[in-house]
Length: 526
Ligand code: GLC
Image (tube, rainbow, N blue to C red; front, side, top):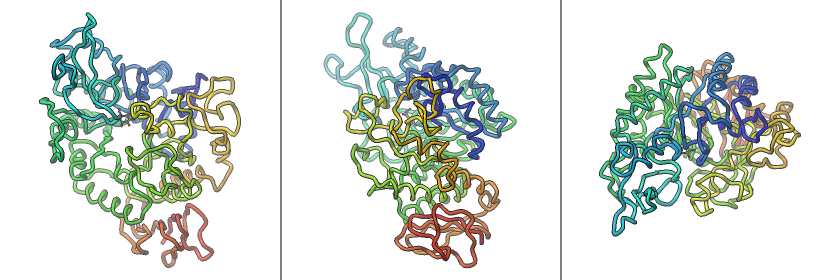
């Protein structure tokens, strides 16, 4: 959940914890087991809260620490566990440690918690490395000395407002172990680990080799990371009801990826390989097969993700000619066919719901919200947008506040006498609201509610092994256990249902003889 855009309890136009608490019955009725909250900590929101000023305080725009504790308790009373986001790679420039480091000056112990370095060349005006930021541009920003002269540079893999911590420093390690305990002690059932493969840097700060071998990149996937996660796992396991670690690990090499999931490291990590694949049966089968293959030996739970707060909404992405996802390819004006994208997103929901492992739903995907691609440029806050010189539309298009009711100034996002939402909602979103969709048996919301209900009821979906069914190249089809089958048709003509099968749930109308049409998925009882 992106709390800033979920529900606004106090009417200031920004979502908050009071809003979430009031909407917990909605989440319970939807059928979720747990909610992962993107950062709710005190933050200048230079990167939507991924620039944390204080990990032990809630940002006043979102509420108070007492609100968070009450929210965790109330959610649990409804059977919903809470996963908090921990952002260990960097802090906000407003964080006490960074402010102390700036004040203390070069060579100080305060600066040793970060990566401060003199510049290269005459006057030190060339940054220490030519590393490229995930948010475009360089990764170093120069400081100014108290006397006004140019000073040292500091490292930030993301925006300049997010200085990277030095994970070779014992304070950094100890502090994060305490942050974990702080939130576990308040009832968090798990933590989502932000940018989990980036924390450790090669202290020699070399340039990035043209083709780095495994573990050779100076700031991605270093072998030293695993010790950190082993110590975190030990903390998670020290609780009588074990707490879980979910990693944000973007790595192309699946073997390196699964190292993070060894039994004494993280419990699970987001499956970005699957998320980024196009709507193509061969591609999806391949991703599912590899995912299951690499998770089995380490005994970790696979995850299935269609989107999150960083990527293009599924109904928009699946309606594009190129339906794969890559940050580098996001551009304004890429056409999409929303009707087709919606059909596919419905089918994709049934696919992920039928796979063995954990399914993640990003808020608003259960409403079939499209990416908002025409936000007024001056309202876009995402640094990915303006750091790219305005070329990358950024990620705010999937962060537009949710529509709850058909009418009202913010479509029920906040109180009717409240401020306008922090990003404007498209005019036609009243018809996509929770209110409108709750009454409609054919809506995306009804489909998600049904699929999560059936998923819970059918033991085969929790326990049954997966066996592939060969229904043609353009079909993803498999059995779970002996009694249940999922058929997803990505091809041209309809596909016949497995012999003797009855449909339990379908993402769209089946043919009169029970076949599965194009861009449709169905679950069958065998
Ligand atoms: C992760 C978050 C993203 C954030 C980045 C830097 O990728 O999901 O939203 O901008 O880390 O913290």
